[in-house]
Image 1 (cartoon, helix red, strand yellow):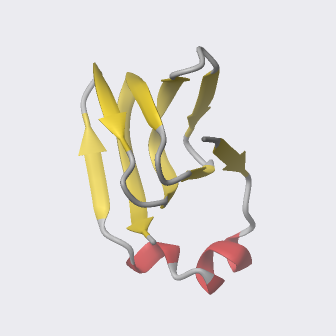
Image 2: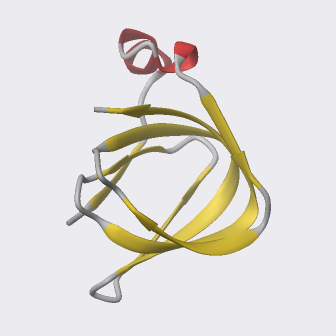
Length: 89
């Protein structure tokens, strides 16, 4: 299971209609999560470290477009409060 972090241009974000997706917010915290669908999201604010089951740590935050693969189990560590657009597929 993988996590993909990219920087997309404003045009690429608009083509995906990212700014019409719902917004999710989370305070500084740590929690386990399982993805039963693939999630794409664009971080408006925040800083996060996600640790996968195999021990890999992926860091991302404001300005990043992140894809979480279906079937991924991980632990989220929210370092700075998060505000992101998200979409499940």
